[in-house]
Length: 344
Image (cartoon, rainbow, N blue to C red; front, side, top):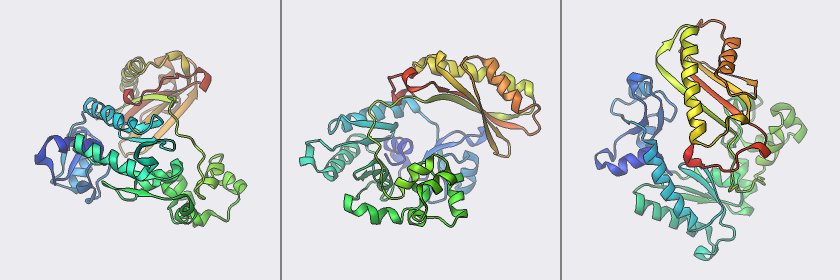
């Protein structure tokens, strides 16, 4: 979907049409944007930006509160549209999915026509737009889905992939985050073709085990299947505070509160607390520097999170604006088999 949350709000309120719209927290309460429409993006506004900064960039920006239950409800209905064309669907989030239509008999097996029909149905029934990427694997289709946004689709055929992927920027590949992309730029590599002279072993030496995957990705090779039974790998909660935390006692109190929220989230998502493999904390300071720390642990207990915090922050030398807690889940055979993207 194109700017999903914002598009839903605009579809329900015609007054918002043709205005810069964002969905997120209040600027006065250290809110962060979940998404914004394409008009707002022209000003340089983007998701994860602080609401206060967004308002300073665009004085006319309208920020609406997040109504996640409404978005989930509409998402479930949209996924029903997908199911009309294929049963092999891998949800990525409430507004995105991979759909394998290899053996679908709809539209005489034409994936471009299927994508057109899906997008037309979404527009007609929900008054929001969607974009699609079409290709023989997940990597290329994902890249294609962003090429013609909003409200469009793009296809790359098999014989076009080798030439197409050469000129794709490396930061468009899954797994290349800011840190890895900066590493690439430092090595004078910006596009996939710039990496072709590196062997698998050289890429592994630079990027770790991801180097093996990267060697294939830069050539447009992706053998991942569309996974219809995704398994949850972790669960977490976090809070941004109206007032900075300036001492360990207050932090410990907030950790206990967050632990209670984490326990509730586990219950809602049917995640047994005895599957803890590793706990982690996230700390964001008032200068927006963020650190994460983790520790092997098999016991779901607030004392363990507090100890992890104290091991890394013996005293609060810089005010803390955000805290997060979470844990990773044990190996596959011990993991929960039922994964519902809408209960995240």
